[in-house]
Image (cartoon, rainbow, N blue to C red; front, side):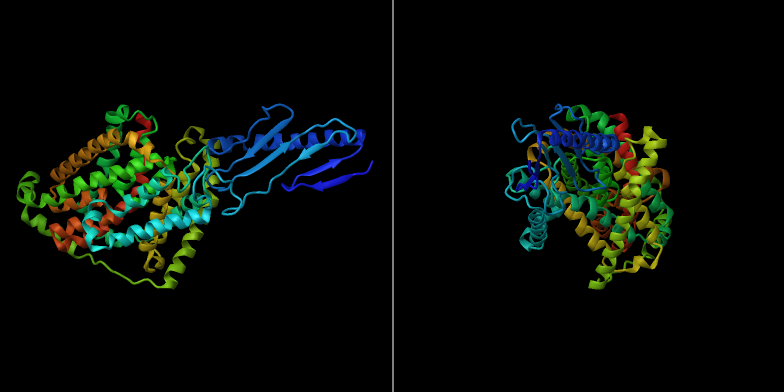
Length: 517
């Protein structure tokens, strides 16, 4: 009997032969396939189960169907699925074996469709998110809307507008482990690049000349955030009703110690969901609207504050003199500057992506108890942060445009997190989460008052230190200019210190929140 091979539209190949020959070939092929599947299961089960991907699945559907799903961890972005299906037929043509191996999905091309939405193509999804961000910042420059954007800054629009688009069915949410490749690109490629570029702007020489009192107050405020997180969760955790809510508080600690970039970094380190990230963005904005007027209004009580802390006029003058010695420098970036920065940032992201899985494997092998705490994402963020701080000692720090490019990438990540969430998920936990955030900011304020009393610091330095923590580089200069314009350079340096500390201190706060949870 002749052998016939006809390719189907899906790429499957049917092979039919004589009864004895076909049966023998089928048994041989089946044994080889089952052996390969078993090997893949044993090698990948633990990795993919921990990564939350498809994982390796056992042949639990009987001998007629066996599937091994090769999901991917966050380092290997794209899923590969290997399906083996066996179909038996009785007849003169004998027993046939049906083998199907679908092609590996390529990023931005062959990805699965995922949840239904108006926009599913990865390139179109990226275009929608970029258009949203461009529209938000264009509106923020409209004079009639300036007051609105002062109270509701662009970062919250960058998150909630994509979330609304997902809720009404324009873009795709995260569902059943599916991730749009555009979201993967924004999260696993652009975020490490942004964090590296932020760290590259740090000027440790300027920090050293800042003066110990200003640095001490900044560190005291940071300590209040690290300790206040677990206190807030212990108080309001039962009201939230979500055992994973500590991840939202951990993400918020990243913003309150450093800035939006640190919030994004910590979210990635601990695997916070889009809902938890949204709660952090919401609380960050609402607390900021309340806390900023308090910091500005504290200037009126400078004399009373000086009596409370016991600071003399001479000590206050020394603090101002040290702050005035700092100089702020603005450089205009060129196209070549951006190309240099992109090349360096891509190289560092590649290095971190290469080394992080190996470090995670070492921890899992020799310190298995730390595996849930120090994940591959944790190593990736710590590596890019450390590389950025290390290279800030080199002439690379003098390349213009690093901060601007980094913040653009951070906003893309924020939009990506918003697009993956649903409005209803955030709304159900918003009120109890905000209660916990209010308690948290009160703990931070008490630490600032206690630090000012112990170290005899004036109200201006204390307010700027708190603003550098809670609001970052966007708020610290505002508070400094309101108290004393000559303190603006000091406020910028303090905010940069917050960027440097943010990923490390916020991760400590996250682990403390996880401990009490």
